[in-house]
Amino acid sequence: MALQLRPNCEYCDRDLPPASTDARICSFECTFCADCVETRLHNVCPNCGGGFAPRPIRPATSWRDGVSLATHPASTKRVHLRYTPEDVAAHMKRIEAIAPWDR
Ligand SMILES: [Zn+2]
Ligand SMILES: [Zn+2]
View 1 (spheres, rainbow, N blue to C red):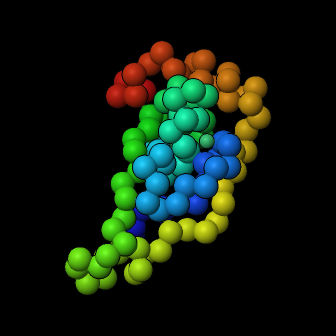
View 2: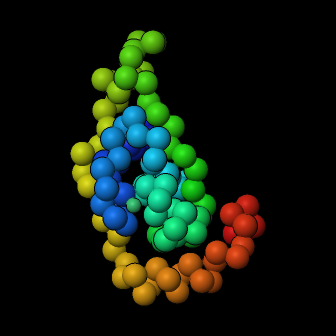
């Protein structure tokens, strides 16, 4: 199973196409833009509390058979955060001072 390449930032809904260098993901593939991760979420995933890493870019070219964007296309299902900004703020406050590897 391939990583789910989600089409948007869950927080601000900005488009994050597969080749975007601005996409950030947590270990559960929750997807946000770099701006939201840095300025709003402080490296705390609002869904799971984990940290973020840049989302790898899936090659558009089939350099090997069966492993490219053509054979494993990006998801088109937009995902939206299901918590209120107040809830997210409280969640972050509990977690942001703890380094991701100690969470
Ligand atoms: Zn965003
Ligand atoms: Zn997460």
